[in-house]
Image (cartoon, rainbow over all chains, first blue to last red):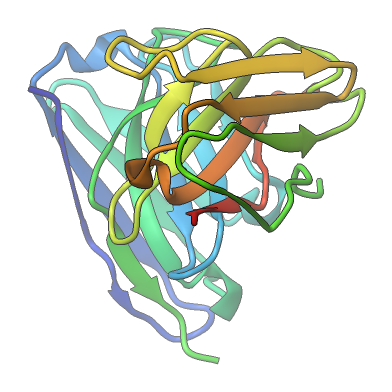
Length: 122
Length: 110
């Protein structure tokens, strides 16, 4: 069974940093693209970033480019999101998501974690 | 890039059919068949219910179907059931190599 468990969320002041982690199990981790998707409670979904299993393909949503860094440690089957220069508009539930495939551009969000909440007070 | 455009809400009675539209541009839906749909019930994580515009994942009811015309994708649910009440999101790959969601459509089963 695919399991994705996020951690690292919390309250951080504007301009601060957080590192989110996602521990993955139940599948061959480096075979799949992984994503971060966020959602303000009660609002819509927003894709944040993706990273290929191997081969280095990385992409970011424009508003986080230059501030967030996605990475993965395939030996630890863990996905990360380093979040710097945080803003109030970054406040959201951050989901770790496994793609349906090993590489793009057919990217589909196949398995979702339960999310970790990030709050940046204004 | 702005979100794909979906109606905020749709409704239908049990047994009826409804269609949710998702309008993009020539840089996303109009450029690729990499469109997907997600169903989200309150307090739950989203669930993939359609990909490659028209393909249903294993286990998803055949009452769900997808289509695309130009820069608009659509999700149709036939034979509405109470359990279909949820928020539905579309998503597309873009020419910029990013992914974009629609704003979400709340389906109410009357």
